[in-house]
Amino acid sequence: MIKALIYDCVGPILVKKNDWQFLDFIREIDQSCGQATNDDLFWQYVRQKYSLNQGQVEEAIEEISSGYEKNLPMWHFLGKIYGQYQLAMINNGTYVIFKKWIKKFTLDKYFSLLLNSAQIGVRKPDKEIFLLACQKLEANPDECLFIDDSEKNVVGAQQAGLKGIVYNPDKHGLFLQELKNYQIKF
Image 1 (cartoon, rainbow, N blue to C red):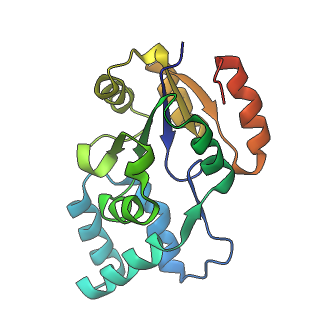
Image 2 (cartoon, helix red, strand yellow):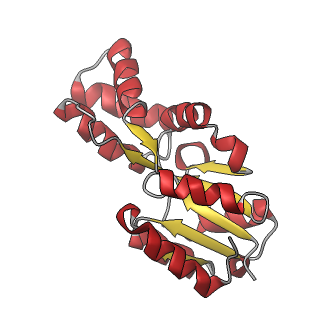
Image 3 (cartoon, rainbow, N blue to C red):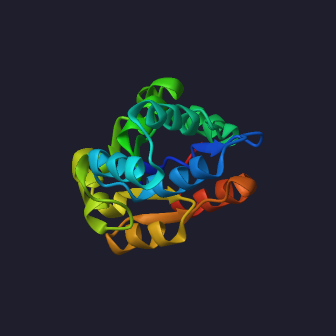
């Protein structure tokens, strides 16, 4: 029986704004944020690669963090299951931006556990990050369902013993159908 739903952040929970206009280097930084396992090293790399001063780095952080919005169908679903299951999130990315999202979208209201790769030094699909989440949730891996828009990350979760669903924000109805395979009630 599933006790916990563990989500990726970008894709299932947050999506890029359709009208987000940005410079090419901002897009490149945004795309590389998911590789971060250490904030200091990541932002040092960004400063060097793009010859940015600290003020410009702060502007890039603001631009990236404001370029996302709630995936409304998933938030509607979260409202239906809140309190029935433990909810957790694993984010690959910089904690600087993740912290802004936690505040802006009140992620800590819904998710009792928020793990970030830059804080713990491990990122998806490494099975260590999934097992850490299960441990903190006090749940066995087979009692956890991981939801991510990356098949590679879902496979990593499955290799750690979790159940998994590859989520497509454009096919939320399919996601709701797949949940029935795991007896998720909503």
